Amino acid sequence: MARQPGARTQVAFAFESVYGTPPASGYRRMPFATTTLGSEQGLLSPELLGYGRDPQAPIRDAVNVDGDVVIPMDAENLGFWLKAIFGQPTTTGTTPRTHTFQSGGFTLPSMAIETQMPDVPRFAMYSGLVADRIQWQSQRSGLLTATVGLIGRGETVAATTAAGVLTDATLPLQRFGNFQGSITRNGAALGNIVWAQVSYANNLDRIETIRNDGLLEGLDPSMAALTGSIEARFADLTLVNQAIAGDPCELVFAWSLGANASLTFTVHAAYLPRPRIPINGPQGVQATFEWQAARATSPARMCTAVLVNTTTSY
Image (cartoon, rainbow, N blue to C red; front, side):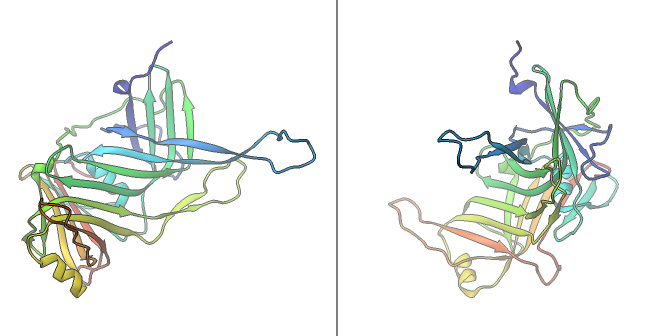
C-alpha cells in the first residue's frame, strides 16, 4: 500500500467557460506551497423522541467546497490568481507585457482545480471555484507568499486524472522576495515599516438554492473589502497626524526583479485609525495601524494591481 508524500502532489488549474463545468483540456500545473481545498458534508443530529436514549441515525447535510491555496508571489503565474480575484485584466505592450487588474468588477471567472495524489491514487477535481480573497504579508526576511481563499460548487474524485497532460507553457518561476519590496505613501518612501499585511476580499454571496445534489447554485460578488496592517517604528508623526485628521493616503506596495518582471499594488485611498502607542520596554516603540481602503475620487476605484512580465495574456 503506497503512502502519499506531499512532494509528489500537483495542482492542475484551468478557467471554466461554463460555471461548474470543468474543461476537458488546457490545464496548467500551478506552483503552490500548501492547500486545504476540499469538500465537506456534515451530519445533522436527529431531534426525534420516543425511541429511547440512543439516537436515530444522523442525516447528511449540504455539501461545502472551499479552502485555501498558499502560492508564491511570482512574476508569471501570479497573473492567473489576480485574474481570479479581480477579473480579466487589460494587457498592453509587447516585451514586456503590462497586465492591469482593477477592483470593482462585477464579473469574476470560475475555475476548475484538480489536486493530484498519484500514489494513492486520488485525483480530486473541484469545479465552480471562485476566488473569495487574497492576503499576503511583507517583512524584512522570509519567503513571500500569498493565501488565496476559494469557494466552489462540487468535487469529483477518481483514480485517474481528468485534467490530462499538464502544461507549463513557458512560464518560468520567478519569485519576488521580501528584500525586493518597497512601500510608498503619496509617492514618497514610507520608512520605519517593520511589517505589513494586505487583504482583499470579494465577500462572495453563496446562492444556496434547494437542490437534490446539495450543491451551490452559484456565487455572486458582494461589497468588496480591502484592509491591512502596518507596524511601524515610532520615529515621526506622519501616520499619526494623518489618522487624527481622517484624511486618506495612497499606499503602494511594489516588488521588482528588473525591467521585465515587477508587481505594483496600489491602494488609492487608505484610511488610518488613530492607534494606541504602547511602551513595552527599553526597545524601540512601535505602533500598529489597521487601515481600511475605500473607493477613491481619482481614479474611481479602490485598488489597482499592475503585473509586468513576458506572458502574452491571461
